[in-house]
Image (cartoon, rainbow, N blue to C red):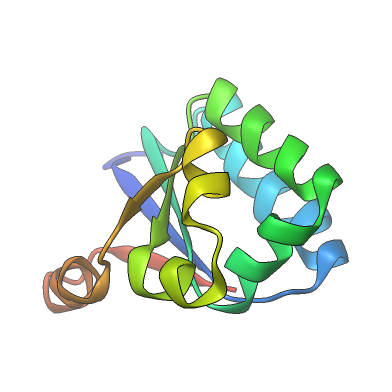
Length: 114
């Protein structure tokens, strides 16, 4: 596989099965097996609420970070859902993602939306 670079995964679903069997399975394995050089998981909307409420999902976030996945969350969503402090305590970067996401799209970067 040539041209390996950076994959961004925009996670907006509050479905726990999707989190376990797709989001975290793929992001962690993508680094472990060298499918991508960098993986950034962006937590947005309902996914932030799921992380805030589900301890098993919180553990998956920690495992992904330990595996080298950059995990970041939309600050506007996290503020509105009251989960900023919890996300930060897990090691999640919390920033405003509107402009960075626009840049990713305008530069035709690799973006997987879940």
